Amino acid sequence: MNRASVHKFLVLTLVGIVSAALGCSGSGGGSTTTGGGGGGGSTTANVQAITVNTGPTGNYVDGAFTSVMVCAPGSATNCQTIDGILVDTGSSGLRIISSVLSISLTQQTAGGAPIVECLPFLDGVTWGPVQTADVTLAGEVAKSLPIQVIGTSSFSSVPSSCSSMGVPEDTVASFGANGVLGVGNFAQDCGGGCTQSGANNPGLYYTCSGQSCVVTTESLSSQVQNPVVLFPADNNGVLIDLPAVTGAETSVSGSLIFGIGTQSDNALGSATVYALDTSFGNFNTTFNNVSYPDEAFLDTGSNGLYFPASNVAALVPCTDNTFWYCPTTTQNLSATNQAFSGGATGSINFVVGNADTLTATVSNAAVNGLAGPNTGAFDWGLPFFFGRKVFTAIEGANTPAGAGPYVAY
Image (cartoon, rainbow, N blue to C red; front, side, top):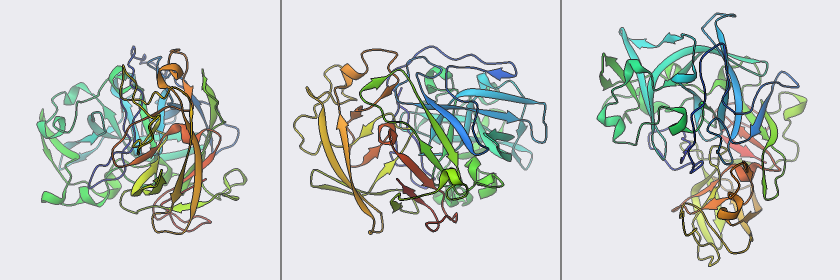
C-alpha cells in the first residue's frame, strides 16, 4: 500500500508514502492485541520502544512500529494494549482500526450527534468516529485524548465528499497497520481551518444522524490531538533514535523519546535546528542544483526518500514498479537542507539503491537506500532517520532552542 502522512491542514500536501505491498490482516480482540508490530517496554518513563519490522501485514517495508495502551477514560482496568501501530512524525493524532479495538470508548458528540472524521492521506482516507481515551505511552499518559477509530460498522456509509478525496482504508490489510501514532510538529490534525464555517472549512469533521453525515466545525480542543501535547511533562516534542542500517535488514530496534531538553536522554546537544513553515511544517532542500523551497520535510511515516530525479540519469524507475528507483549501481548522493526562514543549513549524504534488489526478500523490513520519484517536493522518509537522532518540536511549545515547530538532527 502507499501510506501518506499528513500535516495540520487547510490544504493537504504530500508528506509521505509507505509500503507498496499488501498482506494479510492482523488479529484483534481480547485485552491485548498483537499484530506483528514492534513496541512495549521502556528503559525510562519517557522512552517508548519502536521496531522497524514487517508489521501486522507481514510485508511492510521501512515502517517503525510501536504499541499503545488505550483505556476507557478514567479507568485503570478497562484497558487494551495494541501493537502494530505505525509511528508517524508527519501527522498528528492516534488512529486505530476498529477491528483490533476490543474495548468501548466514549463517543464524541456535538448537539447530541456523533462526530466522525474523514482524514485524507496520499493513497486514501481514514473514515471513522472521534472517540475519547486515556492513552499511555512509556510512562506518559494523555488523558481524555480525542482519537479516531477507523472503519466502525456504526458509520459504514462514507459520504461522497469524503470518498472523493480517496479510497477508504478501514482494515488492517488496506491500511497496512493496526493504527497510526501521529507525533508530528502540530498539536491537532487540522487546526484553525476546521474551527471555521463555510468555504474555509476543509471538511474533515462531520456530525452524523444514522448514516447521513454533514460537515461541521470542530474546536481545537476537540480535534484529534497529538498525544504528546496532553502529557503532563515531556510534552514539547519527540526524539526518534534509530540505529544505522546498511543495505537491508530483517528488523532494527530503536526509541521514541518524549520531550526535548526535558531530561538527560533528550538533550539537543550539538543538533542543528531547522525552523519550519508554521502552516505546513516544511523547510528547504536543494538537490543537484534544483531548489525545493518550503517543499521538504522529515517523515517517519514515509517508507523511502521521495524526490524528483533532477536530471540524475542513473535514477531510473523500476521496470515492474515505477513507484521506486532502480539504479543499476548504488548511487551516493548529496543534498543541502536549510531552515524555512533561512539561517541554519547543512549537507546530507544519502544513498539510493536498486529497489528490486533491496526488497527481493520479503523479510527485509529495514531498508536503507529505498527511494522513489516525487513531483516538486523532497520527502525525507524513514531511511533518513537511520543512524541519526532526529527531534520534532511541536508548534508553539517551548524548548531549549526556542518555540516549535522545528526539526533538529
